[in-house]
Length: 386
Image (cartoon, rainbow, N blue to C red):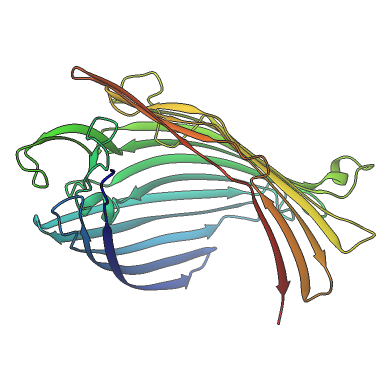
């Protein structure tokens, strides 16, 4: 007989935030903007489980404060820009059966944005940005309690635990975007970007001897670490328009589409496929809506596609993400201005989603594949405005 396992966890989250902004208009088109932000989250977690002797009890908190100042100015009817500085500080602490751990991180980020309008009276514009962004570890990354594998412990069935010594990710980047607006609505846009990332956070697998949650054993453990530097770049394309704007004989179908292409490289991980996590080579989305002229009916649909890809996460471990294609369609019958009936079919052509992980090294070779079944969902909903 299979063993019966039970687990219970209760969470209580309390959050608070406060922000203030001061704006001062100066002469010659200048405007000074300064602000202060405060935010805090406190979590109490209590749980019991028969999988491990850990009680599951945890108290964690994060406190963030930030201050910034920037000068916004307009040179003339075509050019405007703003430049400034932002300082952010985050303190995270957690208390569990292993004691109290505390993590403090801060960053000073410069920023510079410029905007050019080729024709002052038009909405068309070109935007340029130089920024430094700051991605902090989550509470789960920092202080997550040990979570034992439900199956036989191995490189592809690991225990998981947090890492209180994580440093934040810093990304310095440049963006160049162009937007072209149509008469009567619609737009096309393109955005080029490049980012240099330092202290990239990634889950890595190691063997740990005599861990606190499994005394006397050697366990395969997955935990987040700063794995070094990375670089990523890409182009994002978007178009929204009515079909008869570009083809006069066509029906007035509203088209919305976007497509993105990405390239990335984690410098301290050997290739090939040493890309960022969860970043395929491209993504694509196409949607359409058509309002029937002779009836109070609107028909529409959307197609989203992500190709499959492999990611090499460390020298020894790799991950596989299967292709995703999702098709949604809907019909809306509007009885009146306040009442409508909507029929939606989500995931019209369901297909299985495959993921996998591979570990080769230290005298071990292991490959795992997971197939997740997808389903078609049909929803009929009456919408009423009261």
